Length: 77
Image 1 (cartoon, rainbow, N blue to C red):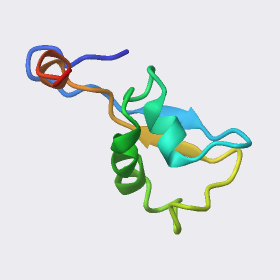
Image 2: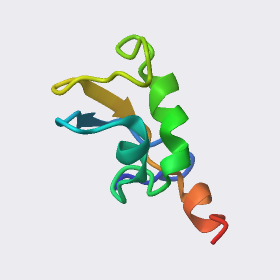
Image 3: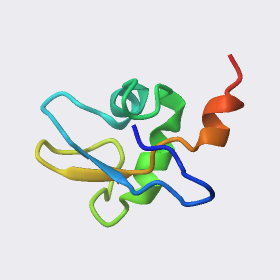
């Protein structure tokens, strides 16, 4: 996981869509956001590839930004 260093934003990571994936499931993966409700972050970062968020296809590459150190430290458990 990449975390911001001294105000420098983390570089976006990628995720390859697998058969049976959907944005809710991808966002909920601990190595992505660990929060299914964060699916909209993936969608808005990849609107060039996602025309309909209910229909994603295997082998697409999605970009997502890792959580910042602030987001990790202030997570509402």
